[in-house]
Amino acid sequence: MVGANANETWRKLVIALPYIWLILLFLLPFLIVFKISLAEMRGDPAVYRSAGMG
Image (cartoon, rainbow, N blue to C red; front, side):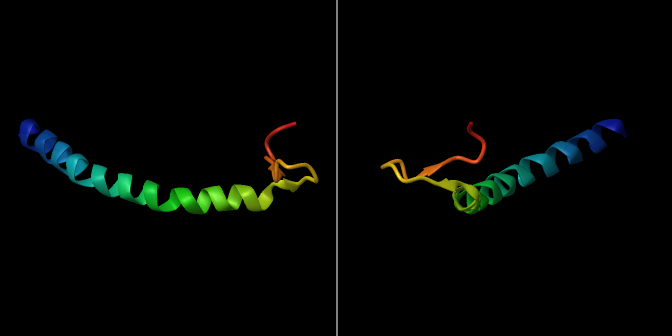
Protein backbone atom coordinates (compact mmCIF):
# COMPACT_ATOMS: atom_id res chain seq x y z
CA MET A 1 0.00 0.00 0.00
CA VAL A 2 2.47 2.62 -1.14
CA GLY A 3 -0.29 5.04 -2.13
CA ALA A 4 -1.81 5.09 1.35
CA ASN A 5 1.58 5.90 2.90
CA ALA A 6 2.12 8.76 0.45
CA ASN A 7 -1.33 10.16 1.23
CA GLU A 8 -0.54 10.07 4.95
CA THR A 9 2.72 11.96 4.36
CA TRP A 10 0.96 14.68 2.34
CA ARG A 11 -1.78 14.92 4.96
CA LYS A 12 0.78 15.49 7.73
CA LEU A 13 2.60 18.07 5.62
CA VAL A 14 -0.59 20.01 4.88
CA ILE A 15 -1.50 20.02 8.58
CA ALA A 16 2.01 21.03 9.71
CA LEU A 17 2.48 23.87 7.21
CA PRO A 18 0.21 26.43 8.96
CA TYR A 19 1.79 25.62 12.32
CA ILE A 20 5.28 26.16 10.90
CA TRP A 21 4.13 29.48 9.42
CA LEU A 22 2.67 30.62 12.76
CA ILE A 23 5.85 29.67 14.64
CA LEU A 24 7.98 31.64 12.17
CA LEU A 25 5.75 34.71 12.44
CA PHE A 26 5.83 34.43 16.24
CA LEU A 27 9.63 34.23 16.38
CA LEU A 28 10.35 37.00 13.85
CA PRO A 29 9.96 39.95 16.28
CA PHE A 30 12.28 38.24 18.78
CA LEU A 31 14.91 37.76 16.07
CA ILE A 32 14.66 41.44 15.09
CA VAL A 33 15.11 42.57 18.70
CA PHE A 34 18.03 40.15 19.12
CA LYS A 35 19.74 41.57 16.03
CA ILE A 36 19.25 45.14 17.28
CA SER A 37 20.63 44.21 20.70
CA LEU A 38 23.84 42.94 19.08
CA ALA A 39 24.22 46.02 16.89
CA GLU A 40 26.87 48.64 17.56
CA MET A 41 25.69 52.02 18.83
CA ARG A 42 26.55 55.06 16.69
CA GLY A 43 26.49 58.77 17.39
CA ASP A 44 24.87 59.88 14.15
CA PRO A 45 21.10 59.95 13.51
CA ALA A 46 21.13 56.36 12.26
CA VAL A 47 20.59 54.83 15.68
CA TYR A 48 22.54 51.63 15.15
CA ARG A 49 24.74 49.87 12.63
CA SER A 50 23.98 46.23 11.97
CA ALA A 51 26.59 43.83 13.31
CA GLY A 52 26.73 42.13 9.90
CA MET A 53 27.63 45.27 7.97
CA GLY A 54 31.17 46.62 7.50
